Image (cartoon, rainbow, N blue to C red; front, side):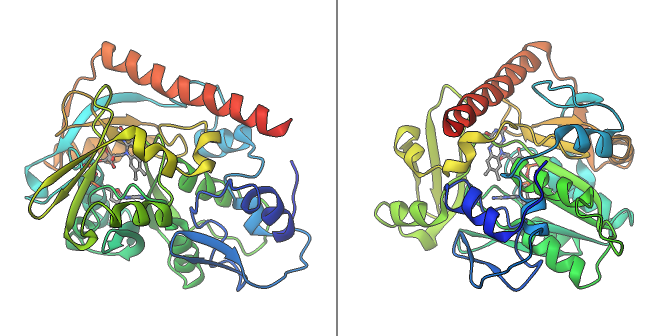
Length: 347
Ligand SMILES: Cc1cc2nc3c(=O)[nH]c(=O)nc-3n(C[C@H](O)[C@H](O)[C@H](O)COP(=O)(O)OP(=O)(O)OC[C@H]3O[C@@H](n4cnc5c(N)ncnc54)[C@H](O)[C@@H]3O)c2cc1C
């Protein structure tokens, strides 16, 4: 594994257009900043090794080390990563009424994690208008204000880095694969810092096939719709091939073929559809839009889910084998495509 500094991070990731703006390199030092969906280095730094490079999910990643650290077992390369069990799930009665992207499993688990004291605060992704904005939250009301999917790159990990600098510990975080790979790398303390303290107590992963370049997407949208009227977005599962935007007055369906040119290039080399470096991972349940697919990966994740069911925060159902086959195929295809693209780029 190469340990390098910000110069190499710029050469190998930013200049190669591989950055997915997860924010893992931001708020560690004064040099990297995020602004409107782009990360830039604003001053030179001559450190030969930096956490910016070591935490970045787009530099070389040691999956064996992550698997040992996270799960205490070797990396198996399975399409869905290491897990204990998979269920269908949705928010239970105890959660109350709020608007969620799918079944509300993510918000339900975060609410319970905060209310039970498992975590002291959570790093979530709210929005300023429709532009994703990371938030540190401490109450269920704030969790609900961050619900629903923002399909644009979000520098969520920068908020975790800042919270850690500010002395917060016992944090929860919700993130996509690139964001949580950055978090997982940080949690291995790759530069062996003596004063390192892991600030994370709970990681909830979001399935993700791709995310959009914020600036390109906003430009594109501004020609279609008054952006400040948008209230939600959704990508229904195949074969829909649509991107759906709801405004306060109407619903707009955009063919996915128009949206694909706005996907971040860095997503094309991401091998992880189900956010493998997490305690639990959550996605849509194809065919049941008000439910989630819930992958339980760690003992801590399983205990939280069991408690959530017992206390009425979550309802579970069986996950049919046909759905499992389909999910495994989709996740396997993402790994294959990413491997082929990475090999092509390396030539
Ligand atoms: C960019 C992106 C692409 C996705 N692609 C797929 C997919 O291909 N297939 C699939 O099954 N599911 C996908 N999902 C996950 C899906 O949209 C739902 O987030 C998931 O099913 C959880 O639903 P929920 O009702 O439990 O979420 P809610 O309870 O509504 O909570 C949503 C959570 O998502 C977080 N969030 C929102 N936007 C972002 C963001 N940009 N980055 C990080 N966190 C964010 C918020 O902090 C909130 O906690 C994607 C999510 C994102 C962010």
